Length: 115
Length: 112
Image (tube, rainbow over all chains, first blue to last red; front, side, top):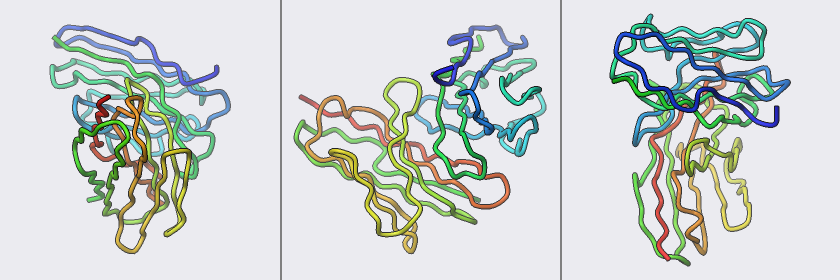
């Protein structure tokens, strides 16, 4: 596609439920990043994929969070047993190169609200 | 711990003013520094800086990096209301995972 696409744009769920957030990066971009942005804060790193593998998942806050990218393109961020503190905008970004040489192209984000 | 700090946190100016935004960093292994503008949701890329002392310029915006003192500045001259946004600075690490570490951003509001 022309840009990074994220769905859903908004998700409201109840505490304890499971959610999936999807990211479709720019075609041909091998690097994919997930960030979380809370109100008044900068994007907080969650996980980085190089191809199909998670090169760095050190930013995932706990084992309720998991992400996959099975074919090296679309990625899904999965959150189990959601908590109110998980409410934030989840941003996905992709880059044509790995190794931190290129700019990140961001999607519009998925706003998650946990009631 | 790798850290990126931006100042000021927020700024209100009038159209035509010049603003200078600051980004300082403490990281283990620096590769590059990027500036982004975030108006609503998706941050949009402004500049990438890798070398000290070389100014990057685009219209009324310019930026420079000082790798000795570990900071960068973003200048906006003749500000317009359309410049109102959050300006984010990110530092890319050179080793390991190449993750991009963002600061908290500077919220700029330009009044007509």
